[in-house]
Length: 179
Image (cartoon, rainbow, N blue to C red):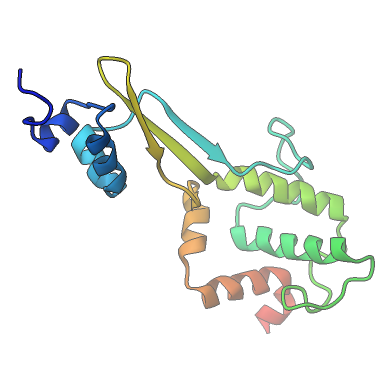
């Protein structure tokens, strides 16, 4: 068996020598896709952390009456509720310049719908990937973060900003958008 010094780095990576400092430094310096190409898919441990509702709605409560599958509508509700929470008398701002289509609804109902949307969007805040070797040693690194796993929400947030803002404004002020 060759000594560690004479074994090529690529071979040590392939053999998953996770106590070898040079192996770890090399893997850490690689793009994630390159590390996966070298080590294969991580597992069996992959931990994912998603954005969580803030307590106005909980998984299992059922779909709130105001919940909508359109992210622009949910953003409009969020802007209205945020404006109303800041002050008993909403102060016009760039996100809520005047009374909108959602102002007549109770804030608590808007917040329930927004919490539901947080859950439905499947916004991945972070992911931890783990590889192991035959000696029980592991290599752990961060995976994806700040991505929407719900395809509808992912498409919405990849839209050009002006199109996204236009869609939110149309959901917030539908009569103005129709004019």
